[in-house]
Length: 635
Image (cartoon, rainbow, N blue to C red; front, top):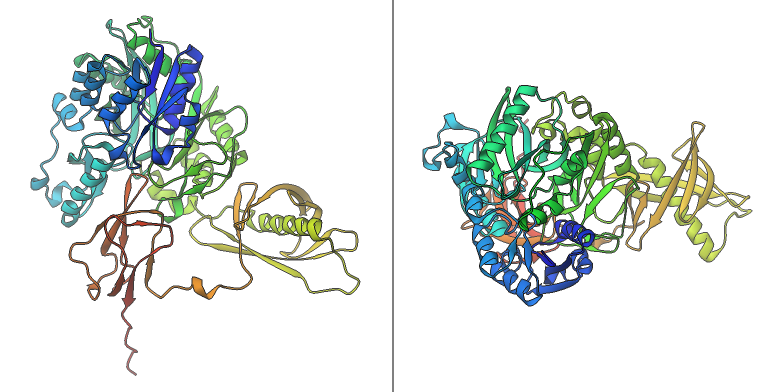
């Protein structure tokens, strides 16, 4: 029997495994990098072992250090979670050789399926030879042979960019998974991403726990997942389940695993088998009423699964909450998560709590929110409303995008549920939501009430000019400003003069009630010292009355869109070079993803402050491109 378990991972999945261990009476051990010293998974474990360093290559990808940590802490089993070393056969063998129980499939099964290239060979599917790719083969997908989560993946639509994308994907894969191998395969446009959850014991029993649809993705990383996959023809669904079971039996699979497919034109194309627990496993757990982690531990202890697969019930949907700005190229965000509170009735899987910091070193996912209901329509409605009501104070997140996605007619009707959803709809989905003006009024009056409480004052017999406050709304494709004008009244209240048509019902530092068109709305307001104000689901920034001249930057300045590390600068790039619009100048790595910084216009590079290895904060000056003056038209 397992008595003490080490999780060779971090964040949400470590906390998830620890939760089951507490229920089972198993003590827990965490490992942590220096960047994670105060992380939630460290606080929740019974014991923790430091892995010196911050980068994954120094810490969570060091199997030797993790095995030593398990032995030092007295653990008798290791759970790899997902990502990092979860599909590394060498690490699995090292765990077993150390006399520890490995919570996963046999190393031979990992070798057969964890490498996407070898898995395809096993099923008779050959990848493309990069040297032989022609225009007729485009588009193609460059893909990491190990790992997942969208890292090390690039869609190539122009032959001239293939070599560059191979290099970029390889570098990203090496950083995320410790394996730089990539391959090339045909890219199927806008298919549905459907997968089958498997659970197998060592006695020949194989459970196929239905299907999941994971089609809503950005950068090949899943955003919203659900079970069962809706709208699949019965024959196609049966074929998916059968193929998954055959794949598992072919390699003597034991434990939890997932077989992924791309469904297009009524046909299923095999993608890969993930020899680990998936991020989206909660939706399967909710539908089938099982605890997959508990079953993983039972199987690892030699237990037998019941011969019959559990019966499904209802529908479950999961949304991944990311610290990122969807309207600005999905740029990851960092900073303090000042308040994080989710309504009751929602399953929350997270590695963060209020007050924790979101850093630059790892994936920007904050949490997964999952709901279960009798029908898909009920689950969609329930999750959208829960996300709206959640209080998330801190960096910009994709929360509003998730709500808009769940309510989009293509999603609610399964009309066009495919991986091209965000390519088609992102602009509309990231348009600033309504209510920004009222939220700004609430913010201004809450601030006025707080000042009145601290300093006194209010209505004067001699009427003064209106007070003016301006708030920026960072949501959407633009920085929308809201100007509010108001004045105190004789009865101790306030009169709003702009925007028009707003009557103040009540105003306090933390709650404001406003009436418009006969409808009273209540706004909870939380203001922070840096000028950020959260009003309900709106995140506003108080604008200074006067612009600080030190904040001005030279025309053509390239500022870091996110905090990260400069990993590459274009070969031979130097001050004085002429560059063209869109030309890649340098690459930043943030949260395990590479982000390309390009020239904003054609011109001359007059400054270059970036160098490989340099860490930069958001807004740091990277380079300056002086654009060319267009000659005046001759009359």
